[in-house]
Length: 541
Image (cartoon, rainbow, N blue to C red; front, side, top):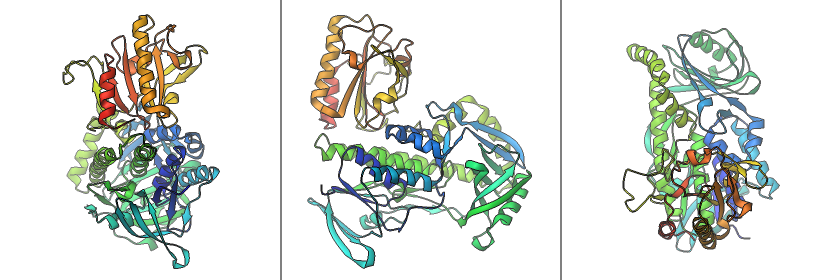
């Protein structure tokens, strides 16, 4: 089948997009100008929300097998512990950051695609791009200088900070460079500190942060004076750690050394016509917090199912991509900018204030919880999106919502353990969401009247008829199974965990969960007219 989508760039973002398009059976082509996949660690941390995404894609176990779980970030000043952040407290099945080298991330994606007959076309570079109502017309330079001309319905630029796609669209990449220079090294370190925790040291001459990998290997990033790659070796890193950490250590077996400067830049639009940007082609920022690759992969995750809906004539939500992801990119750029400025303070008074205040601020439970949710990206939401909605009575704007502390429309849908009504087998809500489809959660109670149960069945039937294979329905009740609900998709919530996690306080409620795991629509009390009006408005089905 002729490819309908061209992915430009085969880094983690382009490969993630390719894996997602493949599971939706969208015909695509992925090209990369580099002759081979990355051999260095580059981007390292994969956060909880990205691990949830990888679970949905069926790849999370492979990532965990190849990575190192990091549950804690330690902060030091002048060699002494200031405070720490416990990542284990994040509200996710994956209560850690997974440190895995980028080369391994790319390798897992590439192997997954290869098993399905998809290969990355290398030595292929985008030269020119134009578009009209018939599609996107591209000129590709292939090996030996051959030029290929072809047309696609959509083109996605995942080609990094120096994106050709972005340049062809003539989009501004606003921002600036930080004044500091940074050194990077991947080395083996023997010392008394935990090899499975992240360590960040503040020092008068600059900071150094150590990201753990397997077998006592670390990614070391530090501020340095000027750029001089010739000086970077094990001895240089040994001296730097001796001065800034004040912990006895032995550095050896360096496999990668580099120096660089960092920028914070982003576009003001992720879509121009039939062309989209994702990842570093749309936003670049400080590596503080390890947000870059994660944000880019989640760009791809947001876009893939919307492309599939459009190409299968099931709905057109492509217009929502930029309005939903651009604010996320903006927040990440701002957050990493603040983190970088705090970490690189050289003024002695400012550094003293930072070192005194940081333990106090982090010790506040609400602050630490907010930090963890932000770092692990589970707090990302689309509450401001025009493509999510909710209904809770005739006065929808009333602050007296019947939902009790539950996630709002646009929020990440939480997990919970329920049991199948006939087999008694425990199952997670995330298991129901998995597979790239909408999930209609219909909450009820064990003592519901027959008319109410028939109404639930009617709603499920209407939505199935409207969206078809793009939706799966699940009935969630109390301790007992009502007889008038289909057993194959009926689940018991004996401890009311799912009801509580979704803030359900009335006898019945519904939540429509998007394929990317966010709440598209919620209603309590049930109102099928409001649900259908929402589906009409977003052109779904």
